[in-house]
Image (cartoon, rainbow, N blue to C red; front, top):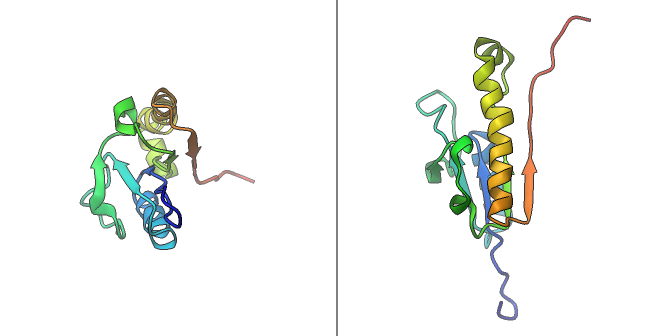
Length: 130
């Protein structure tokens, strides 16, 4: 990089709405960063506000991301997950397929693409009887 010019740090995030919020924050605080998004569109058409940057998501389910989708990125930040207890109870197989299998698939694709950093932020609601 030329003296005084910062080299972009290409990052890809997954998931809406958290992924779009993270991309917006990074773009605001590090304007030279290149932050792209991948999302399956599962919540498209819902009343959720995707926030700034939702329109730039590339349609892609984390369970089918290819190595070529991640080539050239310095980091993958996985924020895609079904994190709602009633939703998990409604369809446990889908929840495991996205949250576990999808995250593992994404990590393997990132490794195959030689992405040096992988961050998975899995969230959920813990409820139970006391």
